[in-house]
Image (cartoon, rainbow, N blue to C red; front, side, top):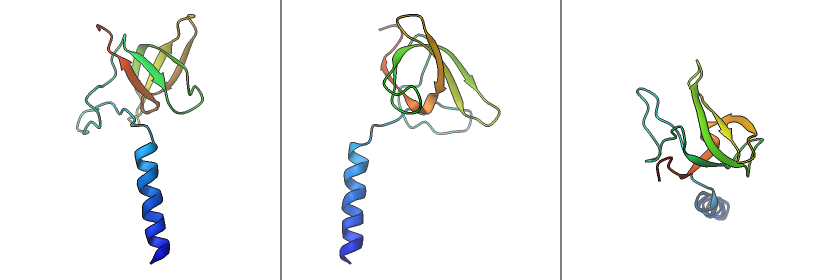
Length: 95
């Protein structure tokens, strides 16, 4: 009884602390966010190899398996590729 209560409390704490991730809509899939990525959006990487980097979305691709990959261009001109699920939108392109 005590162990299951402790596990439930820990799960509740971690779900509140973890950042909300963005998932892009693919045909037939439900979105988990109101802000899908678009070219020109300012984004920040919150997971994966490039965690902590930010830049402007320049290219969005969908693989055969349905995973979204994006190219992000940093202020200094360096580009890198990452998965769409690893980024959050900071500012929309036209704002």
